Image (cartoon, rainbow, N blue to C red; front, side, top):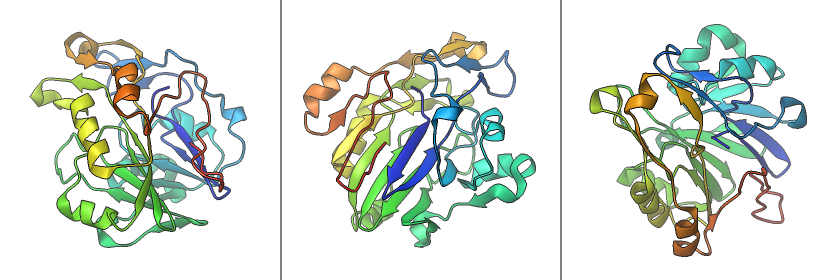
Length: 253
């Protein structure tokens, strides 16, 4: 229920940001350690898949304990995720191309690229663009504010699905500021991209300990309000790991 996804499109399956075992620790457990409150899907139940994609370098996305347990599928990642995994994952790793450069990483009929947020210093939160022909899925687990150039490029495609966070997770500025940007900015992203469907991610009320828990301001989304405001767009998947079927070509999240 946090932000691990399996997406199947035209019979090609990719796993996004798998954190399926244990806790996640940012630096040191005294600083921040978190646990799922809804049990993850067991690794043995994932079935077959073609690739792993890691969007961020932080432990709740780049969960090395989980990656170690998954079969030796290729791993595609954002630049900072690949940098973190370079020693432990070695030859399995490939850095995704920047969406603005016009290059794509091909995984069967699916093409992958990352969206650069334009920040040089941490925190850096990437988006991932997943393309099939003229349709894209945009995965932005920490929200995203696209530049005009990125919007111009995205306008060439139909945004079939947006996966983004609607929660607010705010730390003091020197510790990263808005880790999750909240409902207002998520709403702006939905209205800007006008996806066919949008589902929430990274909004689990996790169990936590450490300094971050004591000082973070967290506001979880009002799903009833979102379903009311976006009656034909927003999909609440609940806690049962339902499948969202987007087309007859078996696009599933």
